[in-house]
Amino acid sequence: MKLSFLHPLTKEPGPWASAYLDTSRDIDDDPDKAISLRWRHQRDALRAQGADPATVSALEAVVGADRDLPGPHGQALFATRGHIALAEELPEPPVRDTARFGGLPDAMPLALQHAPDIAYLAVALTRVHPLPDTGDENGQSPADQVLIAYEAGRWPMSRATPGPRTTHLVPLEDWQHAARRLAGELADVADRHHAETLVLRRDTGDTWLSGVLVNRLPIHLQNSLTVVEDDQGTEIGADDGRALIEQHVADVLHGRLSKADQRHLDVFHTQRARHRARSEGAGAVVTALQRGQAQAVLLSPPTALPERLWTATQPSQIGLAAAELEAFGASDIREEPADTALLHAALRTGADLVVLPPDDDTPLADGVGVVLRYQDVADLTVL
Image (cartoon, helix red, strand yellow):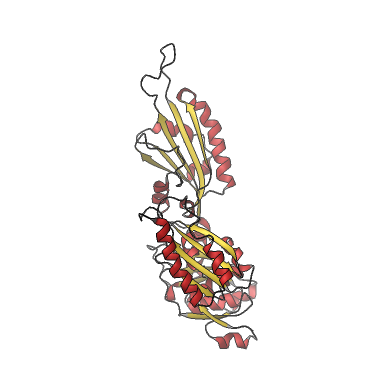
């Protein structure tokens, strides 16, 4: 996945205060009090690590600001020099609340929650039957209608920040005509959001309603389509703060990689077959980042990285030991947690991040690998 969502964390030198909090409001009798207590522990931890009062106050001002988000969730907060640089809602609460003050932002837990970052389009169809005794003044009963709702998103972050939802109510007798227009509307939305997959929910057994729409979709959307079924009457039109047909989308995308990440993985397998020592393990990844040759960094959590790596002021200045950077004439050399340093170097050198799903069968030394970016033909000869 692209790491552009982390760019606000590259615009200032730090030091950085990073905090991850469970801000769910459906698990305690007094959620505000519970969130306040959790924050108090992390605030004290930041102060003990040397965070300045203005930066701590900036974080405190946005803790719990996601009060309208339903279900279990969390916050990832980053501040430096007295102001917030990035605040994001998390689709899952952090495994534990944490706070860290240091030279680099602790962004890896946020990156892992963004993965696999698949762009999709969710569409839901259902028949709407008239209520009894709702005829007009002439005693004629209203006809059935078709309710269609759609929403574009990026999975899994759309669970916390769903996109705008569009709904249409169409008389059943007009469905075949309206479906042509709606198919074009869906195609425009899918293209605009670069959707890789279309998840279509229909009433159980109602193949005609969905078939009319699907047959009018462009072939590339038909080829990316997954149809799921649910009981008729399932609420799909109301905007409850959750992603449209969220559980169905989760089931369809579980264990998948985005198309770009799958291409990286395919290249990695080919590359590793020829150059294993330069393709996996902490040393190989660090070397590629030092040379600006990392096209993508692969992670297979949980990793077995060294506890610390060394960094300096330039994007490619990362090493397994301080002596490596001293040999390059680096200044302001400091020790950082390994995952923090790797992610920051990947971000600043333009590398992508590929997080392998738990059931992927690609073993990696230290849980990390790298897809190399060859800058010229000469690079191929030294591998």
